Amino acid sequence: MTQSGGALEQGTRRSALRSSSGLWRVAPPLAFLAIVAIIWQLGAADAHNILLPTFTATVSAFVDIVVGGAIWEPLLRSNLTMIIGFVISAVIAVPLGLVMGRHLFIDRAAAPYVSLLVVMPAAPLLPIIVMMIGFGLSAGVLLVMVFTVVYIVVNTRAGIRSVDPRLVEMAHSYGANELNLWRYVLIPGALPAIATGLRIGLGRAFAGMVLGELLLLSSGIGLLLLTYRAANASDHVFAVVVVLLVEATLISSGMRRLERRLQPPSV
Amino acid sequence: MITVTGLNKTFASKVGGVPVLRDVSFEVRDNEFVSILGPSGCGKTTLLRILAGLVDHDGGSIQVEGKEVSGPGPDRAVVFQHFSLLPWMSVLDNIGFGLRLRGVPKAMWSKQALQLAQLVGLQGFENFFPRQLSGGMQQRVGLARALAVEPAILLMDEPFAALDEQTRLLMQEELLRITQEAHKTIVFVTHSMEEALLLSDRVLLLTGHPGVVQEYLEVPFDRPRDRSITTSLEFQRLREHLWEQLRRTQTRDAVDSSDVVA
Ligand SMILES: Nc1ncnc2c1ncn2[C@@H]1O[C@H](COP(=O)(O)OP(=O)(O)OP(=O)(O)O)[C@@H](O)[C@H]1O
Ligand SMILES: [Mg+2]
Image 1 (cartoon, protein in one colour):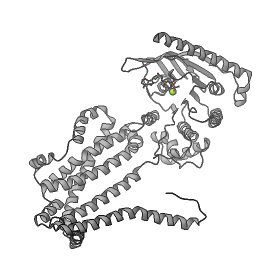
Image 2 (cartoon, chains in turn green, brown; image 1 turned 135 degrees about the horizontal axis):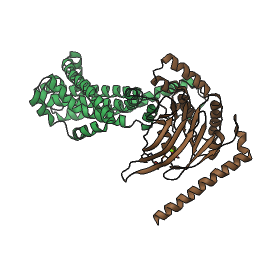
Image 3 (cartoon, helix red, strand yellow; image 1 turned 60 degrees about the vertical axis):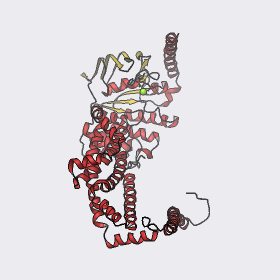
């Protein structure tokens, strides 16, 4: 914030600055959105293509599915899949990342598979999962896990690695046992990285959920999208995508807030 | 009483062993203040870590009160060169850390930590976090944390090296005061000749690669001491003597390594 010195009264000046800076943060993206909306509206109206709804048609479809309620049940179902998959991922990945960060042998044993999962695109695994456990909720959960686990593992491991070995030695010198070490040194030191891993992981879980439902599982939001598309209701398809965008934005800003709260006071 | 006899230490490395300490023998009497003085890389920190039980040694013996050292123990506490405070804990929690690990109940360790914060001049900063403190204040937290566990032996690794001149002088005086009140055996690593002479009863001069004991020098000043001794002739003479010793080995090392290169 640039602040030129002046004899203005401090209180009013500061609040004026704050509200104007809040406006300044929101105004440019809103202006951009308005421009896009206008171009979209004009372009789509001009094109007369049923596959490309106008901006206003999309907005009214959005209102229709949100107020009319068509979106909620599929959205809930999809999110249930995502949340179950994410929670199981975290429960597996955080401890795995922790021990990999601390124990060379376990790291050696697991590292090749972890790095393989990092490079490999998850999509080719979809048919295998379906072949193995069919189309149910558990397939969706497993799919979300495939997308998620590795990112949490990698970040957690990096978090443990980043803990200053001198702090570990200090704790040893005061008689810390392994449990004390985890509790007072390793976990607090790795917490910011774990939070980052969870944030990225949740984003991946969201992507995995949508992709899986669209490509294979035909349930929840994915099924809804396919239904609207089959009915050539392109405005509704767009509206569902907008709902997903809104959710993705909310998730990511919520997780960022959580991540900031987990930062140690030293940072 | 600490007794070190024929201590050897070699670190394993890819190109073979790196000998760091060779045949180091000395003893430290109860309530004695001993400085380990020597050039960078001669193994001072390694020796201190071995005394603390943080690294193994490969030959010789180290006994504290007649018992062989095999790991860290409640009789010894370390003040680290780089403070090693836990960034996510307040000053009070850092000071009480050692007590907490020993299972002292919270009411008790926080009370003791409060008293120690006072002793090292940190009253009012108990709820600050390490990053909010200056280097000198952080080192005081490290000192208080070590004092809190009431060790018979205090092992200090260049505790004042990272401080500015003025803070260092103040901390030295504070250490003189604290050690004159609480009877403790202190092993103090430093590379400052003045600091060693000002604070110690004896100075263990360590030189070379691997480090060997060059001399174990008596410092004959009475206690309680203050900084005025540094201007005495005797102090200047001892300082000159230490410098002579250090210079001799430094130039000898330089000649040695030029031989190797040639
Ligand atoms: N963990 C280790 N592994 C291998 N070599 C080591 C290790 N720790 C120390 N050394 C080597 O041992 C020698 C002595 O190191 P040490 O840290 O004890 O020196 P120092 O006297 O404390 O030096 P300074 O005054 O710079 O702190 C150095 O040559 C260093 O390279
Ligand atoms: Mg050192």
